[in-house]
Figure 1 (tube, rainbow, N blue to C red):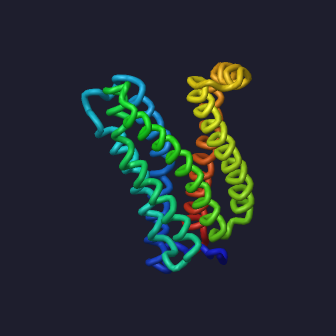
Figure 2 (cartoon, one colour; figure 1 turned 60 degrees about the horizontal axis):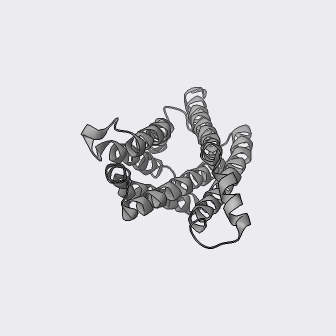
Figure 3 (cartoon, rainbow, N blue to C red; figure 1 turned 90 degrees about the vertical axis):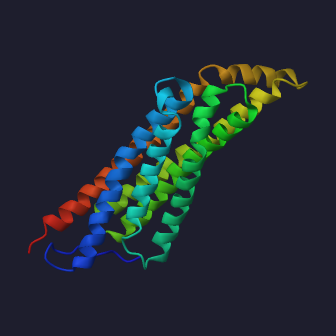
Length: 234
């Protein structure tokens, strides 16, 4: 995708409108990501939002989908960019559809179906964060700032690798947890006990690192767009 020359505020009104929606979408994603994480965690693990039912996680995940929809108004003719957005939007809709199970699983903790749906949502959330990094890669490739393009490419690659490791470790830990109930070699039981010690904290760190770097890239991209447009000479 070719780089995009930024317009001045008094030229190309259609592009200016699309850039405005792009900035709006990036802002929604920047604030929506941490809010969604906190709200979904408390919905699943505590009674903080008990009185609101399934509404808080629906609002937060819907907020993320809204941000992605705003990004779609920018460069709609770029097929690679739009394809990356479509994948992220599909995962966002899946998150929106699965998030009520966080509340139901908290209310009925012994229900296997609710538990499985919660696991699927957790996996979809990791994939969503990965797809968002791909979206940032595609967006950076269209912007004229070479330093931003290099920074986005470098850090999104780190984020994608961290998320891949997180998904792999989560699958391994889940497998060890369930294998421990059956007749398996002793080393499997030992490995499961070792892995369970502090494993949740390791997974939490592996999730928070790419989340923080993704938020930083979203903010930096938004600031570069604003500076390029409103600092440009008339």
